Length: 153
Image (tube, rainbow, N blue to C red; front, side, top):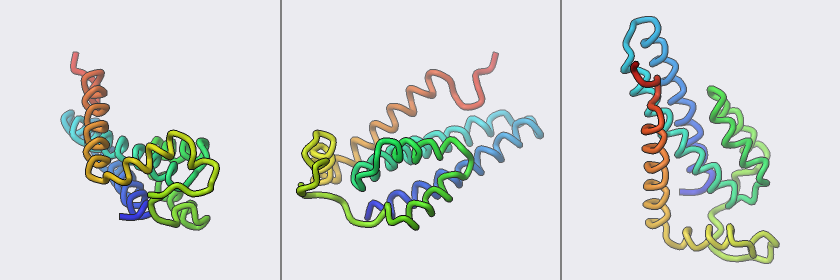
């Protein structure tokens, strides 16, 4: 899977889960179905974390600035903003190219972040497992701190 495809799938999924969360909030406040926000919020939260991880991973691979990576992650906070941002990235060619498995003469390739990226890209199964476990750990921690919809008094 290319960086472009990974990013675009998760950007779209993040926007879809906004719809799930909004419907869940309507169900909670209009129909009194409190569990809707727990379910919808959990789905949205997990996909949000996966999108944020993919934005950082793809951003490092594509040599985006730290600011652009931060904007990519921040678009997930605004409902549906990942979709127009994705289109903006495509129009500007910021998602073009494959995964950077080899070091080049580019100055950024010598830093530890890019070395770590290449190391993990050479081990895609390990990258997938570490990403999934990391996202699950952050998700679990956030649920322990406070589940979507708040705690019942």
